[in-house]
Every structure is written in structure tokens, then in C-alpha cells.
Image (cartoon, rainbow, N blue to C red; front, side):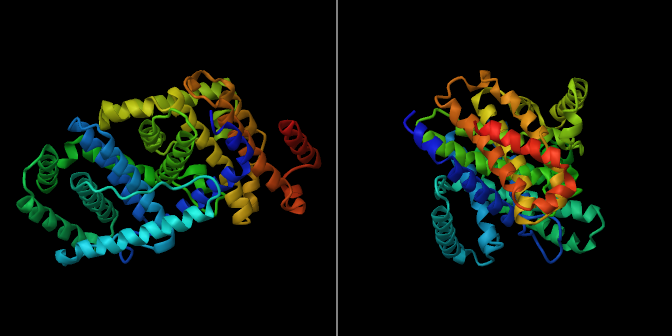
Length: 429
């Protein structure tokens, strides 16, 4: 592999870049949808629900081409810009000005990515504007549907202020049906979806079920948020994971690896869908012993099987095949690395020392399974991935151990701290 030595020599730069990407995703997640009536759902929530609907529509229509996936990837990357700009998701009432707005918007987004790439040392955002009216229009359509069901859920939870917004969207849907030309299968499917919504029959569709599962994932918080200053729900986690994997895949491909980036993206987008019932299981319990591990695996499998009835076999297969093949291995490694990074986000950035409770050798035990290289068939530089995982663990644990000893000693005995230091030394060797 041409970039092998390069990848190994700048490992700390790559880890720091991963932090910057993760932080940007966290910053971007603060931008709200319809913030005058909504304190909960964010622009990225809407983008993720739109993404799932977009994938499902294309799957139902048997459309499977790279241009539709490239447009989706750039759409997901674009959401990261909200951390610097705030909400750019504006509706231009004067249609004649829409092209001008889009031109200004695209220039702004490109400049922000140029800025972000200057900050990154090794990894890069490979964002590009792709002109394709049909697929871009489909994503915009999916955003309207996502917004409708976000507001509809707020209405069901008692927020009466959103009722007028829901009615306005329904009126827009009626206008859309009249104006949309039935020139393609995508146009026909859009009209079909709107017709189902307006006639109260959409609730019986897999589209509706998929949206509702995504909305539930928005309400399931990782780590139970018991000690976190920066809460993370499953929907956001799948977003940040996906963006990170897009960038890692681009980097590895640039060094000569043969990775299916589209497969990797789909795996990460759906990898925690089985948690839609609220079963975010704490690792210390799940991995307590072989018996508990088997028990919780069964719980997760049962939840996933129910998903098949709700959202269809096409999406269900992506979920259940998540860890298979080299792309599954890469996604799994990035998932664990983000779990480690969460430690430093809370302790190092937010001075949340209570999160030190999560610092234990269990993290190291979780990495043992990555020594099984069966899923890495076809990867030229296996050592790069293994080293990235190990170096991430070392980077975080070492920084936390030496950040403030007086705080550390409140959570661990001297013997435990000595064992942590010994572990770091052994791993380095």
C-alpha cells in the first residue's frame, strides 16, 4: 500500500483530525428546526430522517446508481456547516430569487469547507456540488415530509403552536400535487406519498414506519446521559459516525485501498436501528460475562426482527449485515473510536470529571475482538486500522490520566491508577 508509512507516521494527526470532525458534528447539532416553536428537533434530525426516506424511496423504485449516492453523501457532509453558519435551511418565497440564493449558499458552504480543511492536518472533507435536478429535488421533497412528521409528533405531544404549521404544509402538499409533472417514476412516487398523507393512509406504509423509527431513535440517548454534559442521541450518533466514515473511506481510498464507500455509508447510517425501543444497553452490563453478552445479543436480535415487519427487508438486511465484510469492520472500529473520544469530549473539553467513571480497562477488553481479521479480507493495510484503534485508546487514556491527578484520585485508587499507567506502557511497547 503506497500510503502505509504515511498513514502510520502521522497517526496522532489523524486522531486529532477525527476529534475536530466529531466536534464539528456536535456544534452543528445545535441548530434547530423552526426554533420559534420547537426546542427539541434539530436540522440534522430532519436531515437524517430525510436521508432514510430518500434511501427507501430509491430502494422501492429499484434505483441503485452511484450519482444518487454521491448526492446523498454530499448532502450529509453539508450538514456539518451549520456549526459555523447557523440555520441555512431557509425557504425562498420568491421563486425567481431561488437560483441567486442557492448560488450564494453554495459559495458560502464551499468557503466553510476550505476553512475546515485548512484546520485538518491529514484528513479532508471532499465536499463537491453535484448538479442533478431529480435527486436533489427528491432530497428537498424528503425534507418537507420529514419536517411534517417532526411537527406532527410535536402536535401529538401537546404543542398546539405547531398546528398552523402542519396545516400550511398540507396546503403546500396539495399545491405540489397539482404542479408536479408525472415525468418519471420518482415524480409518480412523490405524488403517491403526498396523496397517502393527505388521505390519512400514509400510516399504513413502510415509509411511515421508517420515519417513526427514526423519530424514536431521536429520543434514545446514548450513555443514558446520566453523567454527560453533551447529550448524544442515537440519531446524532449515526450521523457523526457516517460523516467520519465518509472521510476515513476517502483517505484510505486515496492511499490505494479498495473500499466500497457506499456500502460503508449505508452500514453506519443504520447500524444502531435496533435500539429504537430505547434499549441503549450499558457496555459494562452487556459485556459482564459470556452469559450476559448472549442474553443482550438475543434482545437486540428480537428488536431487529420486529424491524423487518416495520420497514421492509431491504433496510432490515443493511441493519443485520452491519458488521459483515471489511466495510463492517471499518465501521465497527470507528464506532469504538468515537466511544473513546466521548471520554475526552466530556473530561478534556467540558471538564466533566464525573465522566471519569466510564474510564476503565473494559474499553481495552472491547478491542480484543478486532484481532480477528476474518472480516478484513481485501484490505491491504490491516495494520493501519488496528494501529488507529490502539493509538486512539492510548491518546485519550494518557491525556485523561495526566490531566489532573487530584481529581483522578477521587475516582480511582492509587493501585488502579498505577495499573492504568502500566497498561499504557505495555500497549506502547
